[in-house]
Length: 243
Image 1 (spheres, rainbow, N blue to C red):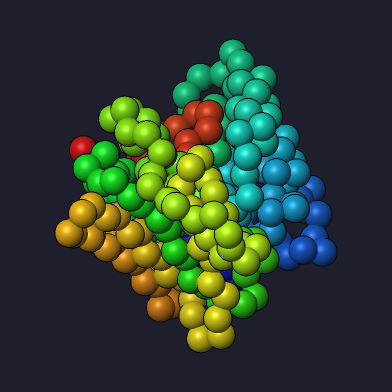
Image 2: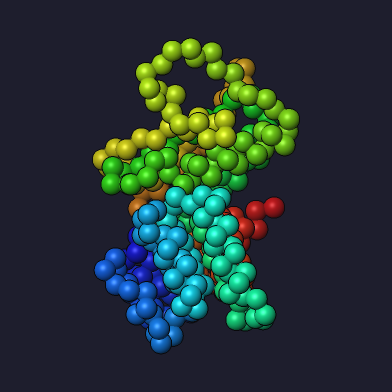
C-alpha cells in the first residue's frame, strides 16, 4: 500500500512526492523536506506513535492503518488541539483516518447504515488475504458500529439468535451486538459482505477490491482534503457528498 500510494502521488499533476520512509527510517528525516502531508500505511502497533510524531514534525496526516480505538483517537484529538491552539486555518494540522479508501467500500458502509433500521437481522463478513495482521478488518468494525448506531437510533432491540451451543468462534466476533466474521484466504485482496434479513427477504451489500489500485483515488482525495480540515476526520465518507 505504501509503494502504491507513492506511485499514485507521483502520477498526480497537482501533488509532489518529496520523501519516502520505510520501517527502519526515522520520521525526523522529514525535517526540511518540504512535506506538508504524510500518508501513513504501517501496522496497528505503530500507527498511533507515528501519527503523534508526524504532528510534532508539523505535518497533516492521512492514515490507512486500522486498529484505532476511541481512546487512541481521543489522544490524537487532544494532541491536535494543543498543536493548533492559536494558529489560523492555513497553519492548523489535520489527521484523516480512513478504514477503507475504496469508493465501493465507503458506499457499502454508508448504504448499510441507511438500511440497518429496516431489517430485523444484520451480520458482516469480511474476506482478506492471509497476510493481513488484524481481524476483523477496520472496515468491518466500522460497518458493524454504523449498523449498531442505526439500529439503536431506530429503537431496535437485540437481533434474533437462538444459538445455545457452539464451537468457539463459530458465530464470529460481536461488535456492538453485530456479529462479524473474518475470512483469510490466499487469492483474496479485500472484500466485504453485509447481510441484512427480514422474514422472507434478504438484502446483500457486497464490495470487492481486486487490486490495490482501487484505493488510490481515495488516498489522493484524502491528501488533498486533509489540509483544509483541522482536527481528526474519521472516514472518507466525511469528505464525500453522500447526503
